Length: 72
Image (cartoon, rainbow, N blue to C red; front, side):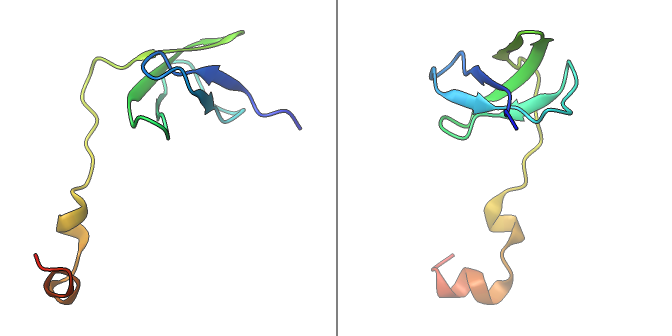
């Protein structure tokens, strides 16, 4: 099975796109962590997402014991 890919417009690395992805979906580049919008399906085309994507703060997800053990 061939996995669709496109090039990240920010860092030019190959980005894997799920075959069931839909146009307008927001994905992240694993290399540079840029938010990318799937703007084309045939061929697969990505553009930098100009909106804002909420991300959980890693430190917010740590419990008290984990924070103490790593010095937070």
